[in-house]
Every structure is written in C-alpha cells, then in structure tokens.
Image 1: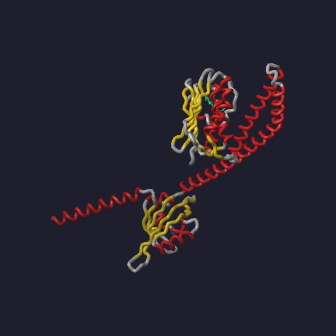
Image 2 (image 1 turned 60 degrees about the vertical axis):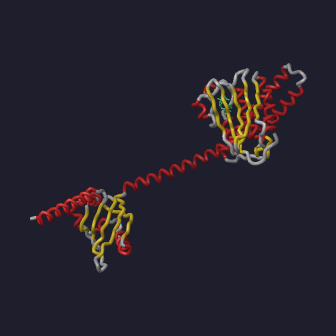
Image 3 (image 1 turned 45 degrees about the vertical axis):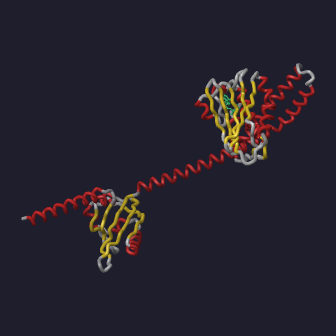
Length: 389
Ligand code: ADP
C-alpha cells in the first residue's frame, strides 16, 4: 500500500516536470527539432514553432525531406558536415516556406551520437531572423544615406567657405585705395575739422573701415569653416598688451560718455598668444560692452590668474542678455532680436572671438542679467614663466 503511494507520488512529480518542460518547448518562439542525418533527412520531433516558421502543418513536416526547406540544398550539407566535425554548428540559412516565400533563419545543429560514436540524429534550434535582417538592411541603408548627406553637406560648407573667401577678397581689394585716399584726404583737411569736406572725408573713412572689418569677419568665418585658420603664437606680456589695447579704445568709450575701468591683478603672466587676434577678441568685447550700454555707465576690464589659466573679463552695466538669448549668442549670425534693426552688426563678432579663444586653448563664457549688464569672460592657458610685479 505504502509502496504504491510512493510510486504514485514519483509518477506525479515526473508528470509535473514533463508538463513544465513541454509547455516551455511548446510556448517558445524558437523552432526546436530533432532530425535524422544523411541526404534524406526527416524530422523526428519538433515543437509548434517549427510549423509557424516553415508554414508546414505537423503531419506534412513529419513527412518531407528536410532538404526541401533549404533554398540551396548545399547549405544543409555544410551545416551537417560542420556539426559532425565540431559537434555543433550555427549558420545563417535561406529557407523556403511551404507557400514559397523565402525567409532567413539562424540554425544551430548539435550532433547526438551513440556509445560507438555514430551519429543518431541532430538536435537543433531554428530562429526566423527575416525581420531582423530587413531591419539591419534598412539601418545600413539609412547609415549610408546619412553618410552621403553628411559628405555632401561638408562639401557644400567647404564650397561656401571658399566662395565667401573669394568674395571677401574681391570686395576688399577695391576698398584699400578708398581707405588710403580717405585717410589722406582727412589728414589734408585736418586743419579745418569743422569744414564739410573734413566731415565728408571722415564719413568715407569710417564707412570704408566698417566695411573692411565686416569683410574681415566673413574671411575669418570662411577660414574657420575651411579649417585653415592659424595662429601666430609668440610670448606676450599680458599687462602691457591690455593697457595698450585699453588706451587705444578708451577715446571711443569716453566719446559715448562711458568710463573704462582697469582692474588688473598685480602679477600677470607672459603668455603664448597671437597679439592681433587677441586684440580682435578684446576689441569685440569692449565695443559690444560700449554699444549695448547707456551713457554714464562703467565698463571694466579685469585680468587675473587662476591656477594655470589667465582669466580676462569685460564687464558692463548695460542692457544685459536674457537667458534664452545667451544660449545662441556664440553661434554665427546670431543677434538679439530687439537689436537686429536698431544697432549695426552682422552677429559674427562673438562667434569668431570664441573660435580665436578656443584656438588658443581657452574657453569663453558669459554671465548676464537683463537690465543689469553682462560679463564676458575668457581664459587663456598659462605655461611657464611669470612677468615681474
Ligand atoms: P554684432 O555685435 O556684430 O551683432 P556679436 O557677435 O559681437 O555681433 O554680438 C552678437 C549679439 O550679442 C549682439 O548683436 C547683441 O545682441 C548681443 N551682445 C553682445 N555683447 C553684448 C553685451 N555686452 N550686452 C548686451 N548684448 C550683447
């Protein structure tokens, strides 16, 4: 009686375990099969997913020669040979479903042998990877398209840069004699600064200088996009440089009824820099500070070292810049919407200044509050020696 109970229990446990594995094999979306070796292979057993993958109902699948599934029958031979030699082989294969559509499957075959080493059958797994292959192909095509478009865009940018370069040069050339003549005229008439002729020559000179400066900006931009921008680095005594630049620009600031304040820390280093380029950055920041500040306000030029960096700041008490506008100011052609029509400028100055600072190995940043003023700050790397106090 007891023995019968125990064996019944064992039977139930076995059935439970069998049910568990059967449901796993039946539910899985991978085809699982057992097939006979040799040229006329037959399926001995398989799960329902095999019917779904091949399109054959169970009874037919049990009857067909396995080789019929292969678009290229040679492919069955190779995987079988490999599985025989290595014990296991996995390959991507083209199958033909019952209704004739072709699918790509990933097949793995394991050789199962008897004690004498003879192959009894192959156990295998079949995964329909057709969709994945299509997706992969689409992705590859998309990448190729994106690459082509990027190359075209790069080529277009390069061509545009070249065009701007030529255009700016062509337009600058006739301006040189205008600049020289207007300068000479202004000088010749300087004994009578109230005369109409003097004011006219002055206007011509200013207009020609402004045009040259805008053309120079365009040229710089073209150099940056073509990757041909270079610096002429040399040792630069930063204190002397800042004082000289400030003294040159002070009259323009004072003409607007503003004040230029110098706040230079006592020990400033000698750095490696391109002086005309650095001056271009400084003049851009100082002239913006003046342009966007009302009369009577201070503009402060500050310099100090912080670790291995020289920090230069231009602070103003002007109109300030909203947080949204701050995001895009360093991009070429960007100008704050409300200044677009009222104040002259192409919106290239900051973009170019930023690139020049970057080319020196530094960074540029901005803190600003609408109505309170702005501080543009840029860093330059300091290498070894320091100048005297
Ligand atoms: P531009 O002055 O030639 O337009 P910039 O690149 O130098 O070109 O400046 C871009 C824009 O950034 C300016 O048009 C202005 O709207 C804003 N901006 C620059 N500096 C200041 C400043 N100190 N205060 C307020 N706005 C500024």
